[in-house]
Length: 493
Image 1 (cartoon, rainbow, N blue to C red):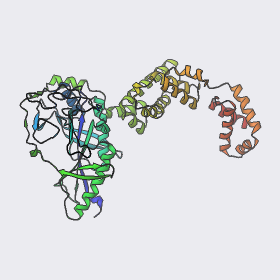
Image 2 (cartoon, helix red, strand yellow):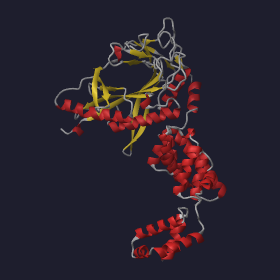
Image 3 (cartoon, rainbow, N blue to C red):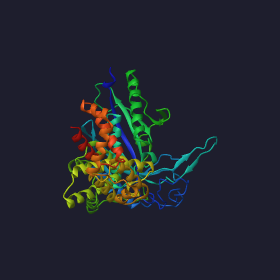
Image 4 (cartoon, rainbow, N blue to C red):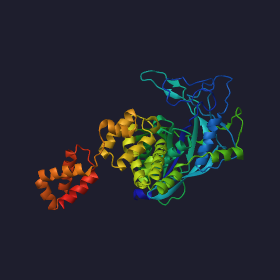
């Protein structure tokens, strides 16, 4: 049987670390960038006798907001439960989570795969506290525990097993990350651990319609690339076992990024292993209709809606739209630049706004993004204001400076700030559009390059490019290339 006759069945569990100032049930700080161990702790995080949890209102709000953004059902009541399963890095001996009454359930996310829309159903999204971090120093017979992460608010999002390939899983994870970021619930940075993914993978045999009787979980993957690679590694492994008449063991695997393979860690737990019961120290959450209406009304524009609007309003290509949407702050910056350009076109009564919008997208996605990424900055951290980038684009469009000169100006703007027109003056980069001066240079180049002129007239178009370059050199690189082209073709006949 062909491998294509076997159908992957994939569900995802995603842990999103919520961007609150304090932890889920205590006053200790919530700082994912903290490097010093055991700094963000209090009596709740360390399980001191007599300490009691108090739910973080902002964590609940963010959890519900994400649920709404994922098209989930939000019930009137929700509660917390205790999960009695040994965590060596949770001192009180249990984890506070949610079981049968989560904050959100029965939602969906639509993703685009191969030009088609695929709907991935959301089973549930529930709040829970994170565990600490075990550290195993090499050569020592004991372990250390860092409680900085213990008690940090997590939203665990669980999908139905609707995903059928590693590519679909990656696209879904990227869309989920964008939704969470646009809502403002988390930085959702997988490499920093504020978003973690655990695929549950199984494979249907040919002709099988029901769900397979097993599933293999791969734990705590920290990048989209590794999530895709882990799934692509597991699927053929399962198929080979099934072809031989066996069944893959229901285990928890880890991803070894150095060897690009999964490794078995332990047997997989079931819900009854956790021995859930309602937490007696935490009251039931009550979501009134007024509260939910307020949250719905405060929902920002989400990626799917923004994607549609950018196509209709700005006429951008799909790749440009996707690259902009993947960087929330850059998207806002781009729109501010476009707003400046629209105001200029309306005031001046000239200029092709569609052409200017495309230039704005190119600057944002190319030169600006490259410089920002090189210094690990967001657009709002740079010296280049949207107004100044719009002015630079206007200078290019008006023939005041060349494209190469604009790059020099932009680098100065990024490094030091400043008004583009003044930087042009300071660097002596103003473009020459004087037809008389350019015509003189054209005549001189034609007279000095008879072979190139003859070749061009014989149909060798590349000779024309050579002549343009020579005129530009004669003009010190400051001549308007459009005027050079017009005058040169005119004089060459």
